[in-house]
Amino acid sequence: MRKKFDERIPRYTDLILPTFQALKELGGSGKNDEILACIIKNLNLPDEVVDFPHKGSASLSEVSYQLMWARTYLKKYGVIENSSRAVWSILPEYMQEETLDAKRIVQTVVQSRAKQRQNKIEESAASADEPESDEADVPDEVKPWRQRLREILQTMDPYGFERLTQRILRECGFTQVEVTKKSGDGGIDGIGKLRINGLFSFNVAFQCKRYSGVVGAGDVRDFRGSLHNNIEKGLLITTGAFSKAAKLEAVDPGKRLIDLMDGEELIDKIVEYNIGVHEVRDYEIDEEFFKKI
Image: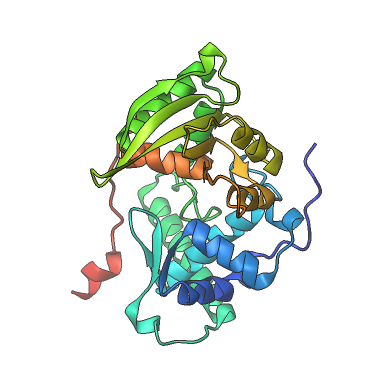
């Protein structure tokens, strides 16, 4: 049964300024997880708020979802931009700004969306076509194909998922990647060797969790306990999400570092290396440009 929505979770309107300030603190640019970590620290958000799951995605917390909306509004207003690798950066004209008027940003973007929606309705009426579906009820970062891919990953054959992980790791630069769980090697699903700059190499063990929820600190501890002495690094991969406690456990000083890859990062890697996905290009027409040129 889904937990009752926690009223302490900040809404996107409350996260617009903190997102901008987090990017400033990060030097003007940052990835999603860096922005999230910075905001959690600055707003002092408790674990139960940070870990509350979003209704529409097993690999996404509600805070992360609200942050997607905040980034969408900042992008549409022209404050930030993002690259293909999900790195967000403040546009040069806003780098010297110390604060923003979040209320004005929301009002401006809402009015712009309403105008675009009305234009589509009028165009459809004039051509007797059915109006296009309105996708404005989801942030720019939420794509239907990503949701479908999440579902596919979570329902894959377990060994098929391990083979997919094996392929992804090879694309990322790993060699000698072997799936070992069939031989009963404890909590380890596979091992591989990562070579950096042709000079340094690490023996890495990985574990795959096809979770539709949150992976906790106990899972990280159990995985760490299964690592042999000849393993320098551990990588825990899930189709779900990691709790705040799990992320802290993974980097606990004095313990063997465990790297984490959640469902969103896993999808990013699949897309980056075109594994089972194919890009379909489309264009958005700037009609005002053609009217004014």
